[in-house]
Length: 330
Image (cartoon, rainbow, N blue to C red; front, side, top):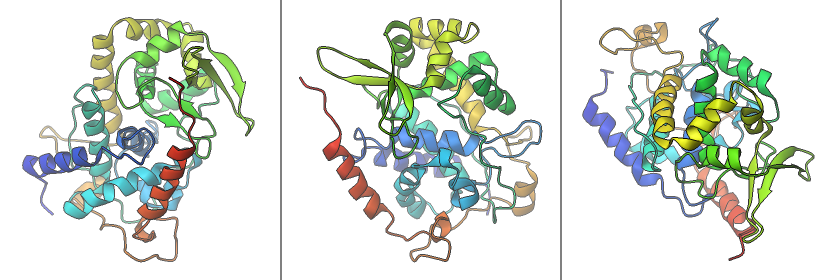
């Protein structure tokens, strides 16, 4: 099809905005998990081989969607299915990345520059291998290996880590449990302020996973940090940027906007006019994969073959989570 217009993308933005409020999900918002979907859809890029990145929407296939690092992202993809139904012309690759930048701004974060034009792969032959996404249990050398592979420097690593202002971890997905900040649906620099100022103690969860926690004695509210978060204050090159972003919200917002936009463009080549000129895009044009089938196929783990009412069991899971999640005592 012809390249989508600005008006078409504006309509999709509006539809995304309308679905962010999800009272039965986590802290009442789909925003954080949409940001994670956008992040993971692009964060597989390898600069040396020019493989991976935000083109293709590879998580539609088990070869990428089944990476343990992507556990739980089926929630985000289900949330976006009504948008895909309303705007069937848009590619999943554009939808997922656009949803992330819309969510960040809607939750009080900076405006993120974004351009469309990504295509959807027609098969799983070009998908990246598992293991390219960050592992929260690791240290500085792991962070640098992952982010340097994508073309980021130390400052950009710290800035992107600021996305942990949003959302929470779930032990049945990442193995970790809890939120980083007090209001996980409001984008701010609190993550850096808490990381810098609070006393974080190691805690072993029932599943054996170790994380760091701080418990407020008055409210009994427990916040958490991953080992990779703690690395940011322990490493002599990361630490100065934690302090800068903790003290200067505007600086953090400015840098985060720039680096998240860079993340969304990983694996994308554009000409002077902004048109995507990757081989798949030139040969196949703006190829939008059809909305998920309404009946299950042979591979139930592939999004193209998932039962159309996938949202129903997820809603039940979210209701159970909210019912059982510990609340802070007032």
